[in-house]
Length: 83
Image 1 (tube, helix red, strand yellow):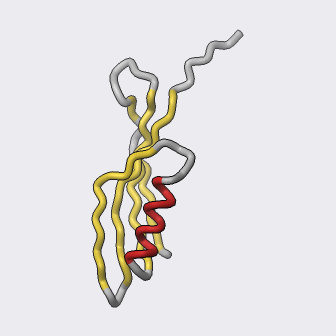
Image 2 (cartoon, helix red, strand yellow):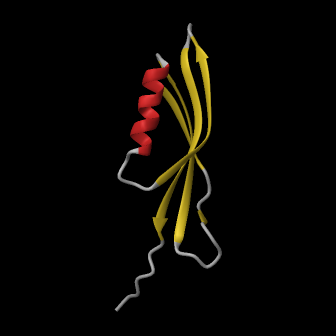
């Protein structure tokens, strides 16, 4: 499987909030739709809270299935204080 990752800029979910969004653009090619869907299912089912969006599929019998998507991971911003 060939893939390309492009990391976007992090941002706060809302002004003054404590949730950081980390978007990643992902392009990959698999031999079949079933294999491409299995990758999306594995990403979505990870232990880290995420949202998959902007999904496009290019089904090409000769070259396999090409997928472009954005996956955004969400994490709590650390607010700990030094003692």
